[in-house]
Image 1 (cartoon, rainbow, N blue to C red):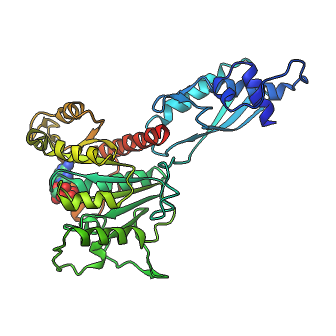
Image 2 (cartoon, helix red, strand yellow):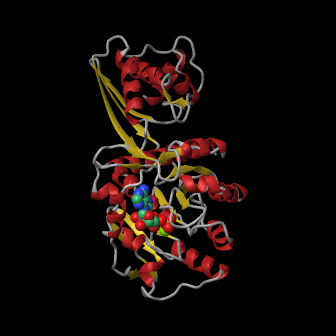
Image 3 (spheres, rainbow, N blue to C red):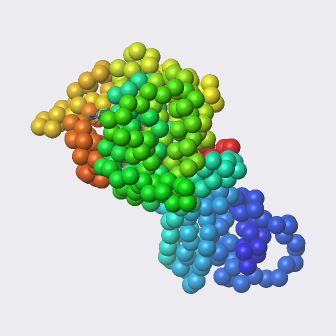
Length: 384
Ligand SMILES: Nc1ncnc2c1ncn2[C@@H]1O[C@H](COP(=O)(O)OP(=O)(O)O)[C@@H](O)[C@H]1O
Ligand SMILES: [Mg+2]
């Protein structure tokens, strides 16, 4: 029946459906039942609706599945490329409207699901066979909130329904265990480390394995070996996104590290102060040189919002500078996080903002950044 739908869709001009169609329609073909015609019309209508982010129609993107029609009631499934899709509502509305416009349709039921797209060659890279996307979080220097962004990015993606891991690769200052409130040592099974799970996120950090007071004075090759072990000796299982908290800076250690991880892309965290000092642009250039796609820039501690009078005070300079700087660096702007004292407390208590105060301004900011990152990854995977 599917092939009939495709052929009819082609005859009535559905572009996307036609892409996937078999041989051309032969004149004088058997007359089709009304039901098939309706399903074909639905596909044709949906092949004229574009995913705004991906810039192609829903049918040729393979996002329309399970089309059923009966007595004017139409149902279908839209499979998004990420559960954290920022355009969820718009896509659903546009698809519904397109189908409702078909004569004879009285009701439209859309089911939304997702199947996260993977970076090219993901399956071939034996280091992380079950991981679809590896997203590094980096910064030009320490203390800008890189780890805070990493944990909240992970928590927000997990909240949206994605399968998420978080690797603390900041071997000099492994802070993920603290920020995620995880103190237990990982179990070992068949010579492999089992990640510790918190807030639906699978965690691994050198912090779990080292004595808390042990100094970490390592050099390049040793660092790379430690990280590749954290990657390959951990039983990550199936993940849509693995977030990697890289060490700050642009030195050898960062370079080696970034090269030993198969990265989908990198998120650069900066403050307005870094912009002035060109610190962030150095980090960005380093990744460009290594041909790691820059997913975009996050401006952290962008402005202080007074909890009493709600007035915004830009601490490190005028707000909106992150956006300007991103444009200047020719990188997407992923969003800004306000300077918020609660973020410090939440971090100390081991609960990401997304979990501790899900309705807060900071949680909303992190959530919006996570959606922007997920969308960028989908676009990137499509263009490869
Ligand atoms: N937007 C923010 N508002 C207030 N404090 C923040 C914010 N982002 C991070 N912090 C705090 O700044 C400190 C450094 O953040 P952290 O994420 O550890 O930085 P990095 O990983 O870049 O060294 C932590 O105490 C953290 O709680
Ligand atoms: Mg850190």
